[in-house]
Image 1 (cartoon, rainbow, N blue to C red):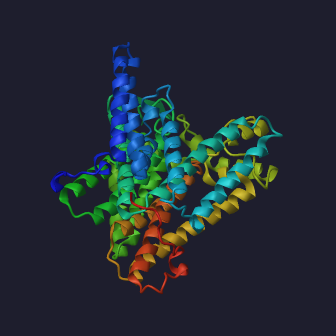
Image 2: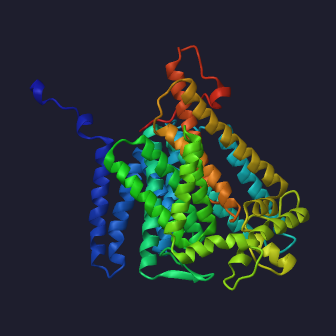
Length: 489
């Protein structure tokens, strides 16, 4: 007869997690001989082990998979350190499979509301434009441009479905902010090491990458400026002096990075944000005066070559030897060309990603739009224009509704409130940048919409919990009264 204290059931000894650990140990033993192989094959066990741990952790907690993928997406290490292995695509496929598994077993239920459908509608408009280039030439370029844009939609979809809590969204926002720190720091270091691009009469900072979003001065300036609203409103939220000091340091580094890129669009967006801060202040008149002083101070600390670059905007219809005036005029010409292409293909445009090629076929000039408006109407036509207006309108209404809920229900401003304020400012900056750049397919438009969608669901859940059981949130106030069915596990 067994003593009661020693009776242990087999189910208590062997658990599913133990089988995972045993499998991991077995794989490690089998891969050990590969360490004796020559480089770079000897690192395969570490890659396999890391990949196995990632898959295991992501299956247990899908947010781990999302966070790793967003790290790759925001930091873009494949631009800095290109390798022949498409690990970004591999991680994306893993996250998609894991999300599909959790959907099938019922741990996750797809959440889509009006804002999410506007993003789907715009993606559909971009897809419809692919066929438009067929009778002008090979539309392979347009197809690949759509494929790259569709990857942004997948990131949007992953984020909305998995990041279902305040803490998860806050972690993602911090990841985005730190990626801007990384971009600003590496660009500034590269510049002061003497690795810059001499263009249009000035030394323009560039990233370490040879190609991609982190390589061109204008793209770098745009990315860094779009991070500044988050730094400012997170500064208002956090009370820890160390965190606040970090945020101030990041902001100053970001401002300097924008200056040394020599991007006039980046500088104008920076000044626009300073004005936004003043306009939103309780003491608007005094704050706008302080904003003007802040802008003058930024201009004063610019080295002379960047001051000249900025002031070239006042001489865009003149002539100069650097080409700055001609570059500024090109922004206006991009709108004109976009309207001409729109008249040629008024319904679906000439096709996503082929503005420059279509311009060359028509006028013999292979230049891009350098304008949000020109790119939108030229590449996507009336269908794309309507879809984009629908997307922006709903996004603006959602953000306004979130702010109104905080005020009407007397909720104290928390991190979600501050993120909403940052997103409102970032949307304005995207339009400001659109005056001088073709940023229609920049990921910030759509990933930021994902942030808004997540906060809307969180607010709807909070309203439902605060009200008596029979009541439900008013969908006209919050636009989304669904309760989240996504488990934190």
